[in-house]
Amino acid sequence: MGQCNDAYSAIQIAIALSKAFNVEVNEPPLSLILSWYEQKAVAILLTLLYLGIKNMRLGPSMPAFLSKNVANFIRENHNLKPIITPEEDIKAIQQTFILKNFLKFLKMYLLKV
Image 1: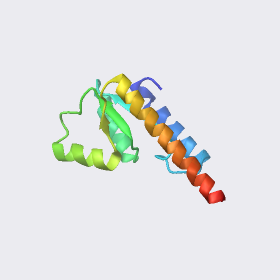
Image 2: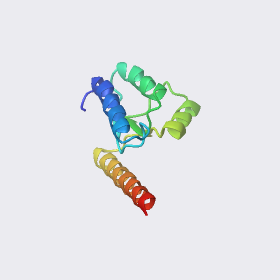
Image 3: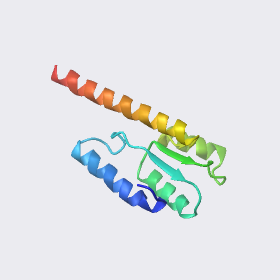
Image 4: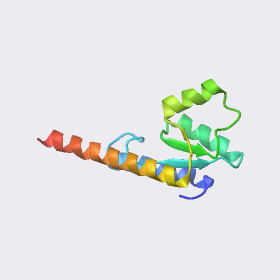
């Protein structure tokens, strides 16, 4: 995906993967980075939160209209993180991907033993 307008497609991919692997929508090792430059990003963020999508990165800064308490709530309950630098964000996403896959395969192995 590459554009803010691709959020719908990203959601559809996440849903399809979760169904294919018989897991919750937030279990596949996917990351979503929203760039905060347009007003429609507000609607997209609210839609993603309503759908229960987690593990999103938002930037270049957190929206000013979010109070500290609301931002903390979203951060804690939806794992919303601010973007840092492209290099640091990619590194964090890769580490999450590796960890999730390792834990998934470990769980599958332990269930077979």
